[in-house]
Image 1 (cartoon, helix red, strand yellow):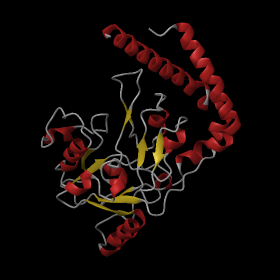
Image 2 (tube, rainbow, N blue to C red; image 1 turned 135 degrees about the vertical axis):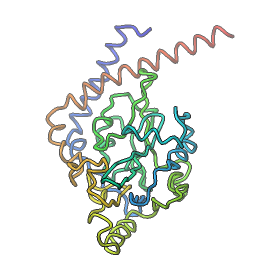
Image 3 (tube, one colour; image 1 turned 30 degrees about the vertical axis):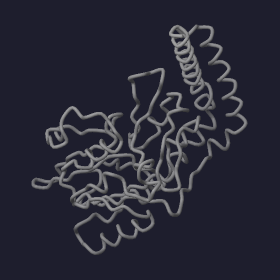
Image 4 (cartoon, rainbow, N blue to C red; image 1 turned 180 degrees about the vertical axis):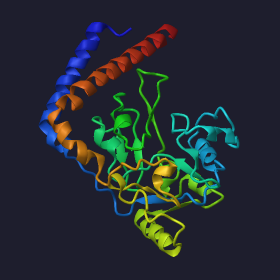
Length: 302
């Protein structure tokens, strides 16, 4: 059990430390900006080519060693509902009836923003934007504040509630550990039978996207989604209909999320210190308690 006194002492100590750091570097935190990397990789997704086979979901599940889904990947009944990513599914495909006889499918996963709101909102630096373009997450330093879940404009990070005292955020990592860092495309891209997704340098994909729009008048809307949204994303999209008809938020601005909240964060230090410190105290004490219990058990067996 976590002693109440230890809990309060931990929270207070963390609060003082975090508040000191926040005051000393609050300006840098509030005004932080991530310009990205010029040779970062990306993926161009052509929604007109997708047939909803969900091969990408199966590939992701296998590559990331995720639990088996409740329904098999060839079960089309999942399209009855609009799904979002979860701790057990880093990517999902949804179906959209956009006209009387036209159906489009959209694959959803982390878009790996150039200037990630999740990274900017994380006070323990659990997120990293790699030079390859991926936004990855370090569970060892996460304290469960869930700022990233709130900050993400695409509603992607999924919080694991199975162990509240050992917080864990789950999301697509662009197959960084097993593929991207070695120059290989993500598993979902590689397996796609319809060549819906094209992997390459983000800068090259932007040109490819616009070239495809110009070469096919009337086939695509004249917009490459993700080129500029929230400062740009590694995953970008082509569509034959307005993007809000296939589940994209039409109100998302081009300006990075952190630019819109930096003044607010600067005037509300509690957001960056006291509240996260509470989670820090809980996490540290829970971890300490767990380690102590583990050591005790080992002693009993000796």
